[in-house]
Structure formats: C-alpha cells, structure tokens
Length: 398
Ligand SMILES: Nc1nc2c(ncn2[C@@H]2O[C@H](COP(=O)(O)OP(=O)(O)OP(=O)(O)O)[C@@H](O)[C@H]2O)c(=O)[nH]1
Ligand SMILES: [Mg+2]
Image (tube, rainbow, N blue to C red; front, top):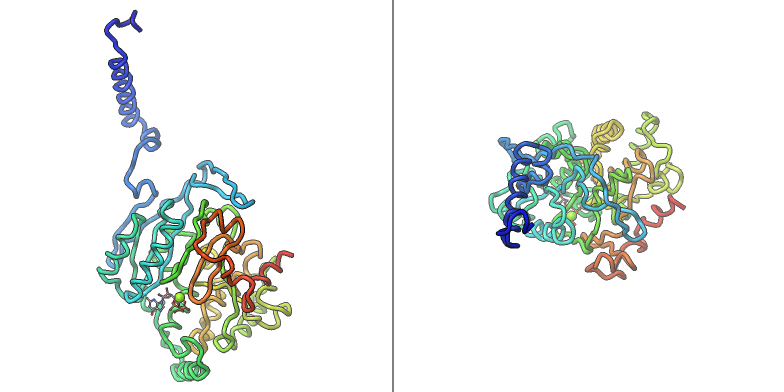
C-alpha cells in the first residue's frame, strides 16, 4: 500500500474502504430492485409483508402472498422438528369481544405478546357486534407494534334470524334456565356461538388470511415458544388444533347428533375415511359422546371452514335452528366437523402450549415445561382429569 500511496495511513485507508462500500451499496440499491429489497431496512409493515386499506367500517391489514420459496431453518424442539423464523405463515389472531371486555382483552394480549408474538408480530383482528370505542382501540394499540384492525360484524351474521320461531326459541331458553345451564337464557351467547360456528371466517378483515389463532378475554399463555405454531400447522398439513378437550353439557345439544347423522346419510362423500369419529362417538357413530375440543383456544385453517364440506354442514345445521332452539356451541360444531371431514392426523394437540381459560388449564410437563419456562404448575393440568377427552384423542393413534 505504501508503494501505491505513501500518505495512506491506516485511518485514511479505513475511510477510503468505507466510502467505497457505501457508494457501491448506494449504486446497487438504486440500480437493482432485488438488491434493494434484500438489504433495505423497510418500515415495520414492509418487513411484515403487510399493506393496509381503509374502508368506511374498518382498517384492513392485507397480507400479501407469503413466499413459499424462502429457505426454512429446521430447529429441534422436544424431539419434534419445527421451523424457525425463516418465513411467516399467512395468519392472524382473531379476537371477538365487547367494549366492556377491555381489561380482560388487554390482559390476554399482553400474555400472548410476551410469550410468543413479540418475536413474530402476527397481526390482530378484533371483531365486535358494535363499533369499538376509541378508548378500546387506544388501550389495545399501546400494547404492541403488531398490526391491529377493528371490525364490525354484519348484522345478519350476528342477530337471531327472522325465520326462527321466537316462541319455540323462548321455550328452549326457559328450559335451559330451569335446568340452570350456563348461559341457558342468553340470546347474545347464542349469537356468539352461531357467529363463531359459521361466520367469523367470512368477515372481510379475515379474507386475506388462512390460519387464525382464537383468543378470548382473560386467558393466559404460560409458556415461551421457540417455534411458530402457525407454520407448524402449515408444514404438517394440520387443519385444527387444541390444548384442552372436554365434555359438552348434554342439555345444550339434545338433537345435534341426530342432525349430524342426517347430514352424514345425505352427504356421505364428505366424510373423510381416515376420520376421528372415535373421538366423538364411543359406538361408531350411533351416539355422540359429548367430547369436543375447547374452542376458546383454536389454531386452525380457515380454508377448512370455507370449504365445501363445512359450508354445507353449517348450512344444514343452521336450517335446523338448533343454535337458537337449543344452545348449540361452536365448540361441538367445530369439533364434530373437524373429526368427520379431516383426517385424524390433521388434528393437533399443542401439548407444549400452556393455556388457561377459567376454569381449566393445560400445563405441559417434563422437558416441555422447562424448555418453555412455563409459568404454570405442571400438576395443575386438565389432561387426564375425569371430564377430559384427551385419552380418547390419544386413543385414535394407538
Ligand atoms: N362482541 C361481542 N362479543 C361477545 C359477546 N358475547 C361473547 N362475546 C365474545 O365471545 C367470546 C366467547 O364468549 P365468552 O363469554 O367468553 O364465552 P365462554 O368462553 O363460553 O364463557 P366464559 O368465558 O366463561 O364467560 C369472548 O371472546 C367474548 O368476549 C357479545 O355479545 N358481543
Ligand atoms: Mg370465554
């Protein structure tokens, strides 16, 4: 170097190198789009491949098609292979709630962000049967940089339809109230169950997305996750997943199974040969055993609900009026559909996700509990308690 330029001291040499590198980077960024994309530090939304549009009711975060070609980085977690942050799934959180749920909503978001989403920034979609207040939006927006959108549910997706015989529906409500069944006399609760069964995935804010993770007020996520459960669903061809399974209150679904059997005989070709019938029936489909996956936690594939089998199934059940004449829950409806229309190996138990919704929780144990630094007592887990249906699920694979 001294031969080339006797006055190029180490400091000057460094300056020359830096200026050359910066100039080259500037030249390539402006002349090559690909180079620019690869190296730029875009806005947060760009990094998350999101754009947004505003409609008169809501701001819609639109997910652009995700890139299937990005190389995946396999990581090993508890003897299972997952894939790390190489790319993201086409997925969102879904939070149906009221303005009055605000404190419980804040608590659930904090739990999810702290234990998982801080590293991923998956978007949040909030749905309500009325406008969210400014206070609601302000208090949830402050919690995270993840994109958030707030939508109002179309009236026809929420309220009791006109063709429902209100006298018959009232009698149904009185009957359940007399039996002291929880929410037995509530119409809003029935609206919620019907909406979660057949309509949420049709909402305009959810159209850009395939996978969703349902969150409710006052739930807790106990464990850190070192992989992306949405990608897990995608990579392993799963359509539905759960953490807790249990028995439904029989008086809420007295005629549901009769309707299911009618559907099966009318549309036998929708039934998946490798189904999970043995999870929901102990006698090969004659009677419903009341088992269901607890739907306040769900990570699932909305394309499954949007598909032909489930669309026909929901329409069939809707026409029976059981969401209002009885009190059919979205949990048994989703569970029966997933058990019949999906292969049993497409249903996944997230054993490593610690989760609580009053009054029950799932807490991992052993290596999963310690690797996840789970903030729950592994002895306090619903898995093998008397009303749990987990043994039936595990029995499917034995
Ligand atoms: N916007 C709106 N959301 C509702 C309404 N009723 C229930 N939800 C939401 O729907 C979800 C399920 O309702 P929950 O009341 O939690 O039903 P649940 O889980 O069976 O019962 P608890 O949690 O024990 O009360 C929650 O996220 C609620 O915030 C309603 O009338 N309007
Ligand atoms: Mg709840």
